[in-house]
Image 1 (cartoon, one colour):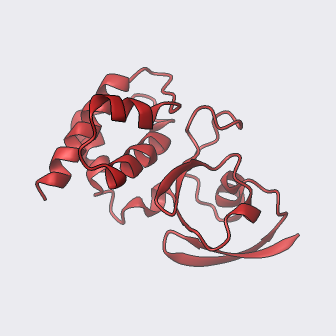
Image 2 (cartoon, one colour):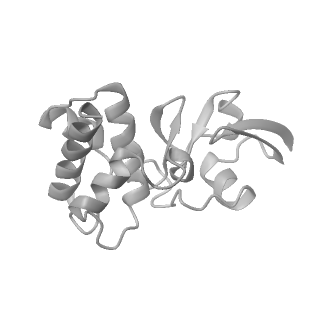
Image 3 (cartoon, helix red, strand yellow):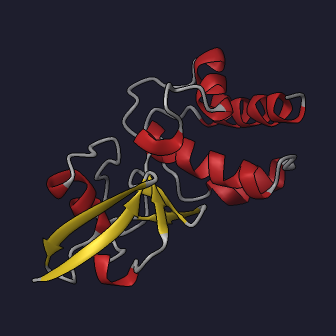
Length: 155
């Protein structure tokens, strides 16, 4: 066991865990931040996506020992009231069906728009590649990303 002080959603969190514990389980089991979902455990589905210093990463394979003092943002920390442009676009376009993958989808989309506020279709496809939606809402996901990009540009 080791003691870690993490910057999660803008707050310092101190906890004692095994250094090999994946961030997914640190968030869910130790900090009760359950918006980040377990999907596959091999970083192939995207349900566990979080931001690490603003970049979308899969938390299921990211050991706590690799985080250091980097800022972590979870779906709970993306916005205080669910008013992030991507979250608003998700509602406007009515993206989710079952909703299980949506936190990971939103985290990947918001990281994309932060680094590229006006992505092309190919850039959206590349950034969202590996975020699996079992319900097949990919067309609505892309439309919501474009909607969020437009609303961000007009803000």
